[in-house]
Image 1: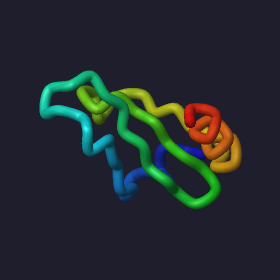
Image 2: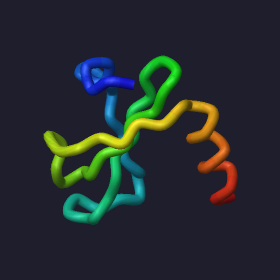
Image 3: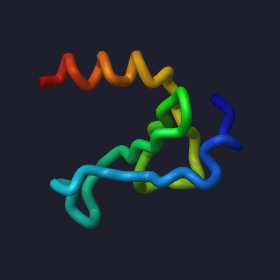
Image 4: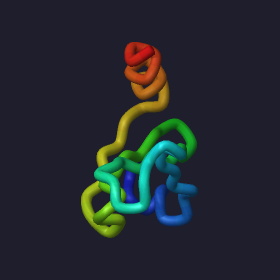
Length: 61
């Protein structure tokens, strides 16, 4: 997944996150998921295949 695919992505963070909390944001873009630091929205983005992201989230439950 390239950064270009995330240019117009809808980034989301947890509703439980406070205004100045240390959080990550997640964007779903086609077959992948982007993750970035909510305090540095122009910084690096980690990209994962959607199926692996789903398994990760499921393992947290």
